[in-house]
Image (cartoon, rainbow, N blue to C red):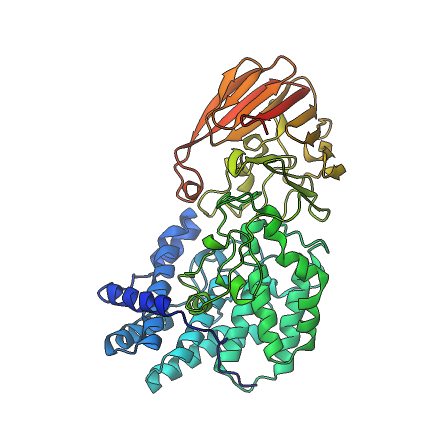
Amino acid sequence: MNCKSLPRIAIDPLKAKEAVALAYRNLESRYPELDLESYAAFSKTGDRVSYEEPYFQRRNLLLSFAIAQWLQPRPEFLRRVEEGIDLLLAEPSWCLPAHNTYVRDAPALPVPDPDRPVIDLFAAETGATLAIIQTLVSLDRPLQERLETELEKRIKVPYCSTHFWWMGNGNEPMCNWSPWCTSNVLLVFLLTGGALDGRYLSDKAIYTLQCFLKDLGEDGGYPEGVEYWTHAALPLVVSLALLKEMGCEEAEKLESSAKVQSLLDFPLSMHAGGPWYLNWGDCSAKAKVGDVRILWSGRFFPCEENLTTDGAHDGLIRYLSLGTYQRHSETQPPFPYYHYPSLGLSVWHKEGWDLGVRAGSNGFSHQHNDLGSLILYRNGRPWLVDAGVETYTGKTFSPERYTIWTMRSPWHNTVNPQDGEQKSDGKAQVTRSDVRGFEGIFDEAYPQGWKWRRAFSIDRKISVKDTCPQDSVLTLISQTKPEIEGRRIRYPGLGVIRFLEPVAAILEEIPVTDTRLRLAWEGSLWRLLVTGGPFSWVIEPTDGR
């Protein structure tokens, strides 16, 4: 097996000029320092930023020089490339501190063991990035040999000799790690060549991809949300393309399967206009959905003018971003109603509304306790929203996850007991979902004995009925500050929510201070707490449509 070529692209002259100019601007920039003390900080305090930020900056800077050296060779670019590679090869591990473990979901070890490399998302990405750089840039022989030795030690040998959880194991649930790691590992093998039997590599990779796909429904719904779809479906596309290059017939079958084709269309149904997406779990409302890989694959994508073309620390994306691609003009979801039975997820795009509700199960990767939560946009403007997730820390993926406010049902558009909330293993049941509306039962989402049913119809207005005990609390989260006028809640510029029975409502401000949340929300979010129950309420737009 010996393949040393990257996918062919038609280079865009303007993009190439910008890439070279970027490298010139960066010439005096220093590569950030990395040390074991900041690596160990995650185990001590849960801080991910102090190590991850310079880690990714190193790779970003290195790629800027490597791309420029490939496009317009200059001694000063080559010097900075060699300097950056030398630093990466000297790192004790390419694995992030938060992922430094040999057992799935076990606490991360404080420092890496260079003799037992862990292949996590970004060790695999670093390996692929270095393999791409050595394909594009002519390095001096000693550095080239060191690079090949480290790729062998950190990627190739561990991949063949160690079972990492993301490789798949029977019915064990997988997540976006499986295709993401696989695509980058395949790039390392295919770009650096070697004597490994291609059939062994393809069989191993196909097994991992099948383990990933087994957890998805035939309907193509992606349980980790539309943002994480980018880090699952697109690496799947890359993996299958690389495997087809190897002559793998099973890759052809997987790519043409109804499940994969439906999966690739999933973001279409989640698009709410402009930069907005219907978001659940750790997904942002302004999701960074899709990148140049979708254009490279020739797929249609909503909101293509906002596709990410600068992959920063991802070598393949940075390379593909130099190409020219045919874009599509369609920007709206083509159907008024989508239903994903595998997720209990229903979405409507009709009468100026973009509305979604999830009624499956809590507890999946990257999910929140948000069963029954309505997410609503009016003519491309957010009305009832999901905050998303704050900057990741050690707490985010730990037993304390569901103590974080963004994960809890009282901070979603749900109904809860006055002193209670949804369980992290809660379940819901869809009893009706069609183009006209929805009915669902959410009793199993809460501690035993508390019952909630939600039903709504959608037309020019949305009529909602929440059947629940009298001492309940309905939460409504918005970006627009509402004005309480008795039973009427006015949202300036959007419309009103009108309650049919007497209710008591109080308003809380949620200042948005977290860096990650501020990517979607400026200033504050607003939490309206409506007490009473059962609740009957109508959402009426200002524009009268």
